[in-house]
Amino acid sequence: MATRSEPFDFLFLPGRGNSGVDHWQTHWLGALPNSSRLLQDDWKAPDPVDWIRRLGNAIEFAPRRIVLVAHSLSTIVTVKWAAAASAEHLGKVAAAFLVAPTDVADPAPSFAPVRAFAPIPRKPLPFPAMVVASRNDIRVSFARAEEFAKAWAAELRDVGNLGHMGNDEQLCDWTEGLLLLGRLLGKAGL
Image 1: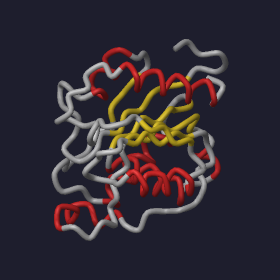
Image 2: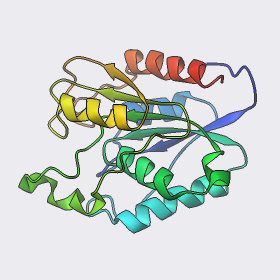
Image 3: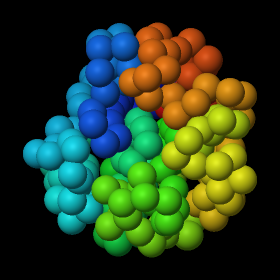
Image 4: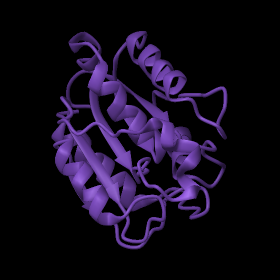
């Protein structure tokens, strides 16, 4: 994935619990140049204010433009950050790859640890974005992922039945995902 214009960095944003050794984010982080992972103080009991602030600081102080590679809860963190960010900081984001957005507004008890991230902003993102959704994701229905993509003016990609595409699925290198990321980079002119 060579750049065609200005250089950029990848910023990986893991979801709740972080990304383990067999998670596609960990594999890509080791394979893609100019990559880093945004770390959080508490992966188990996430605080929306802290997670959004950390993302904002990482973008603000980044030396180059950034491609955000977010999974699960961090897709919502990305959208919430974008809804409140300045035009200057938004301009530092080249694109956002949003995999398996968590439906933080779901009333089921298993969503209680992330419900503080609700409501989910429903305005278009000001940079190219792609929502990658699975048909059998336990953290978001495909229909809700489709609604999010439409509201965020993001391209929606259906990857079939890959579950939540997290640690449990052990996607490792996830070649199909890399191809989708390449498509997004091309759309962003990178």
